[in-house]
Length: 158
Image (tube, rainbow, N blue to C red; front, side):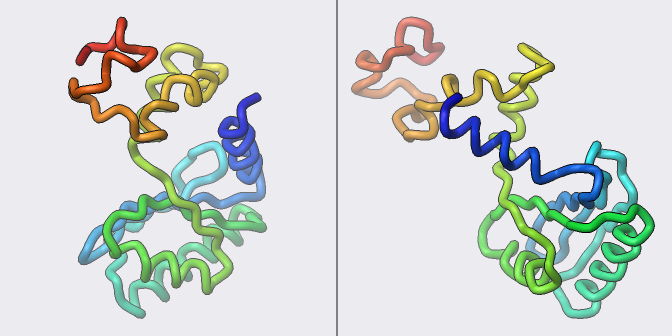
């Protein structure tokens, strides 16, 4: 199994029946959060968590209440690190013992697409098909040097 897939498997194993998952959409003025069980069942939606002490305190109270009601021993917050707006939220979460992980929405969309190919193992083709993009060799547009790419013959831009 490629190294990237090993990391992905290890990340997924962190989330189990005793994990409360927080999905965060970060923005300049406020953040939108969803508190979920490990299988994705939504427990609570916090549509406007402003970037201030009062809102963060309220957020933590909601997290602790959900944690208590579900018997969750650990909490993981996934967020996309866009700009610098994520820093305050991540710092507050981390200071409260919440593990913060960064998610690229592009990666999530790619994995969803792979799930259509193989629903049982959506990351099966992830490494092989995204390697060129990870190495930043492909811009998505035709350019000099494209003819040397191993995918040139099947590329839409070639």
